[in-house]
Image (tube, rainbow, N blue to C red; front, side, top):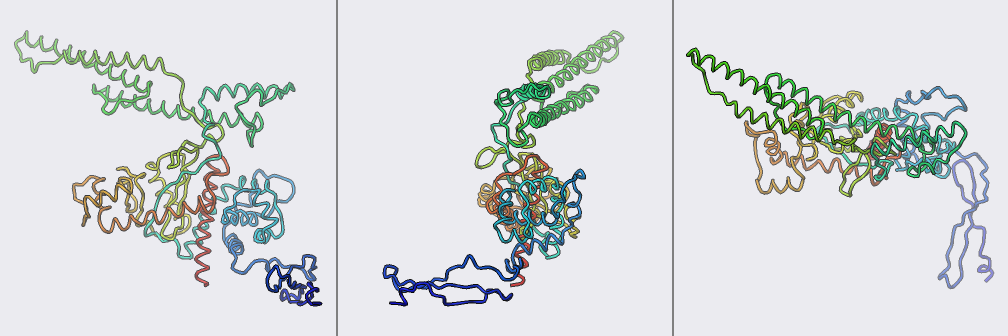
Length: 551
């Protein structure tokens, strides 16, 4: 009974480490019958003092990801990170290599919030090892990413160089695809030019009142704009709205330039007395220019035919051959139609309203994108990967569709491989139906398999039409040639690898790394963040490769 009443007994004093530190461990024996048979617990001694200093290298095992990231940063060219923007003065900044390793390790762990990174620097052993016990605040981390965005994006190429040295940059089969990633902006913040001009006028009035000391309330004057982030001051909101208005003006200018090119081409044809071929433009101003050219051609044709008829009558009076009969009545009917079309085009141009273009006032660079889950305000993130799921090229575009991004991505791949010092060329590129066009199929570059229809339709067509063999027929069109290649045994087997290569990469970025939206606004910031995400993904693949080799 005396042993049962003595529940706390000193039983063990164990060595804690090779440094000679000793820690007292208490054993508690439970003899309460309600708890079952007797139990023994090892309890912590939280008031134990360390007799010798603690070494951070004992906190993490030798093969931990944090040590690998530190080794990787030591191999990267970080000279660009040492250029302080604007030559700012003040307290000494944190070492750029430490900040780079901190951000890269955080991205590898799926942590992109600067506040969460700051908290991890206080509580997480791996983050504390990387920072050496320092605790950079969230504003410092955010400023580092923003100020060094170009230098951080350039590290993607250096990361590829390390992957190539490990033999992971195979170029035999590559997959190209894109995914929509939301911007830090809401869909309901899209406005037209008229709304933006009204708000700009109100903001200018508020700014003048603040400068003169009258101090009007901003939120009362502008209830449609909530103060948040860089939009929290009238000057910041003015800059953002001016940027949005500039986007709409650029879109209008592009439409005007396209109309001018159409009118110029029509004028050249009119100079030869020919109508411009092709579909007539839809834009009112471009349609008016086309109608004026068509009317001028019709007038010239009637005038020439009248002159030719007068010449025929003169030859007939002299008894000479008059030639074929002129169909001047048909030319006059064409002139009447051209006149009616010109009148209609003038009415449309006179009633045209200001541009109906809309742009997001929170992130003017973002665009409305269509996804399988609905519409999203964001960007089109592109990537090219190999069978090791190493991203060889990445880009962020404002284009909602993929068809115009095939050739730019192939050019970017060539540039990236050259910059990384990777010899060789891509042998085969796989792309889905979103990239199909005759120009993409016939453009110079590596061999390619581009689906001409959705994957399920492609498989259904292959089952119905059967398998093909040999090269395509010599007189086949580009689409017939591509469909023939996709239905061969080799082509079908190669194209089946596409989703296995690229889709897991996007799944890792969106699910494992929690990248459902970009954290910073603007196209340049989105490109930097996408490059950092893919650099972290490549480094994780390299880490797994080296860990497997050492196992």
